[in-house]
Length: 253
Length: 253
DNA sequence: AAGTGGTCTAGACCACCTC
DNA sequence: AGGTGGTCTAGACCACTTT
Image (cartoon, each protein chain N blue to C red):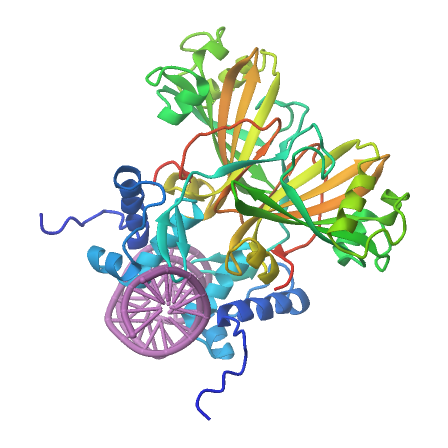
């Protein structure tokens, strides 16, 4: 008899597990409900804990689960849609943005940022740190780089490098005329600092949105914002809630 | 020398490894170069292979590395910017899109899609399958749902449900007047079908872009496109190459 | 103190590609 | 056939939260 190969295309165990769990989440669990712990689940499915964890990681990546050390694994609510590319009130800090300025320092930016801003690499720029909150949860951390030339009327040592100064920079920035903005979205992983601010562990997946604000033919400001990839759906173009498939796995599991 | 350890806040080994490797990639490797195999690397750093793999996974997620089973691990080129939200030639299929129609069937869509299209759940819609290629590599797979009412002049059984029919649907769709489009981006994982088309393994991270095309106050079409998250940077608003930080990890490793 | 998820190990075997 | 990355195991210990 030798080896009866059974399945011509054997599916990995963790992938099959992911599918089974996903269906169970749809039919047998409510949002916020706590799942059995990993050791129990692994035993129940007859796999090693590492394999079970591989399946849970997938589901967490897809925004279906939320895991917290010392607490447990819970069923995650649907992702929140956060508006990113609205055409109106485009300048950062306009409207009821839910952005909360945290800090502002005048320092030389990373080389890549200086290049994009077309400033000298050692020329200090206003670096505003903001965080964005939605539904009571932190969803994004941002660094906004504003060259001094974009806020010419900023009264010198307006405030001693803190939230007040951040607000002053944003206020001055809005006096300019925004021509257009260009954004890019890519996948990244949270550094230690962002991770803490987003209430995640280092290495957590984030959607990195880099936006260039153009005014009078120049790059007036540049923003690098990191959004929690597990909880956020970024919406472009007049917001709207395009609720399509739900734990996005793309056809044919 | 001896022990270079002793951190007051013990960083996970795999995270520290990730940082060390990342710096090595910057300074000692060229794009396309092959890294030593995982067993050698693990031995060289004095860790288990699983730990080394955890670091490699991070770097692959960040688009720094490319791993192929049976071949090896290579240094990845910078991510390619793919335009997604340009205001001009907005209808799918216009311009030199690099989108390649693969198929088209008339079938009842998933319930969530029918809801978004505001059609009955069992009403069949044209379902166009396309794939997008950039720099010779597949970067995206798309399903485009077009209700029959959006292409009223489509000559009935125009072509027998294949690429020709797909092109016919796109051609008819472009005769309408696009008012605006709404897009959303979120993280997902590739299903078996998409994974094969994108030349990745099932579960590979993808950026899911759902776009709603609005014409005459109605949803004229709906697109669900999955982009390879490891190789793509999605650009919105008049393209442009916003090359900022490069293996996006967000400050403070 | 007890229970949770997070990290790490040292093996084994498998699927895939290239020679 | 030999080398590569991908999967899986059965344990151990750690960091964190709650009781």
